[in-house]
Image (cartoon, rainbow, N blue to C red):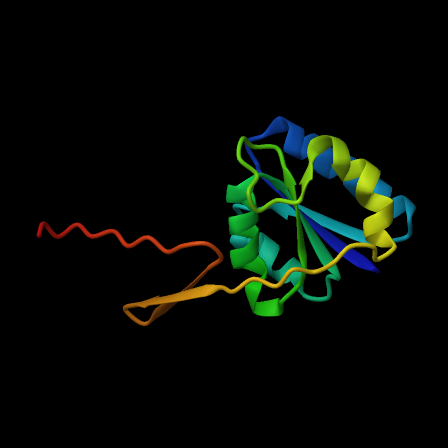
Length: 139
């Protein structure tokens, strides 16, 4: 792996701390890291091209944001759970740093997931888990 991105939850202090720590560890291994808030689609999307992996640090919501950003380029995502549920994240905070050497060595597997596409008023939206439609019309 030569280039790895880090998308983090911008309002969780432990996500910012872990992102900085992982960025340093990756750089020390000769890997070119980049990091960005998972809520800043405009800044994150251009970074994804050429990435071998993206680490998503936060929880299930963060990985859902990350998936929407990354989907057009099919870059693998590894989720680190700092939230409460963690149904679709793979690692917890304690395992993230300890598992990094195995991840960099290519140990593990890639689980492919289907994505949803919603179209409304000629706008296209991608989602990993579900799509919610809201209406201001009363009916």
